[in-house]
Image (tube, rainbow, N blue to C red; front, side, top):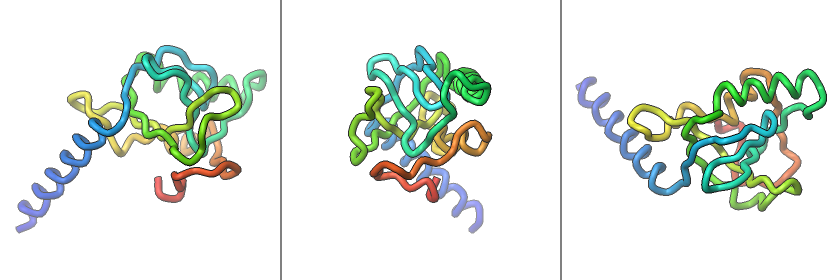
Length: 137
């Protein structure tokens, strides 16, 4: 019985990942601007939705950018665009960003917005309207 439940859960997760991969854009990160902004091939500049990292020109900003570079540069990412936020003043499009898992599918447990906050290189930003609730990450 337990094995059957586990198998059903795995099937549901695989189906969710397949649907996610079809519904959202993906691309390769080609340049990291700072801790919370980077460029994705074929998409443009991405800003992490509901996340703020320290500004460049500070040691904290440099560390945040280095963390993002280590995690993202040349990696495949999956983007869930924040439909309520619009485009930021710097031209960045706010998104939830998921890293690629096995088989080139999104790993829903690797939400980069959450990862950078949990690592201490950024903080939650609640000043803008958003469809995403960081409490649910």
